[in-house]
Length: 270
Image (cartoon, rainbow, N blue to C red; front, side, top):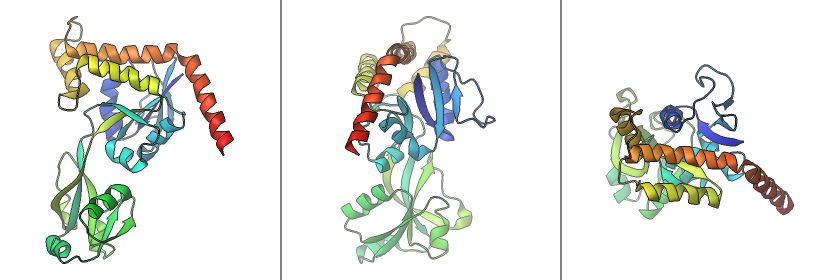
């Protein structure tokens, strides 16, 4: 059984067309179903819906063969034991520094004022300010970052901007214009063998971050007519994705054995 870890929201919405292009459809609508494990049109493939921050963990410990996660999540996770063979080119956004209107951020940094920074991205924030010699006190929050400076909880916030949209003017928070991280969604795997298979397909199709990525290739295929059998890169990408899934399914027994071995080793270490 192949398990794919996905998180509800933007990543799921943008990943579903890619799965369909690879020949996979969900048996139920994740928006209306209360199930967290959803079957697909293939008996050997299922999707598990998890929190965005948990997706790499499911892959790391063998509960899922592959997942799709944002770079922000992977950066905070640390990526131990994980490989990122494909940048899917979906879920693109930016992690930015923002302050209340009227706060002189540049002056505060220049005068080496110790800042209180509210964020859910502790690692990225600590490294960003540390590299610039700015002294900070980190405050971990899980949402509604824009409220932190308005209530006096923090001087500065780090927040994710979806497609570059400006923060809601109602909360009177302005961008400083400093980008911590450009975020996109990646395929995540834990097996070296799985990584090599993806890497081989990507290299063969000459897909890279500088190019359109899989969504662009899928779009090209749909525009040109999916029924028309061309030898274009789009068709090759979809075939490669389907091929990867078929290969995973064919090696199901081997993967189950490998997963059991990893779990036994982990139990022995503990």
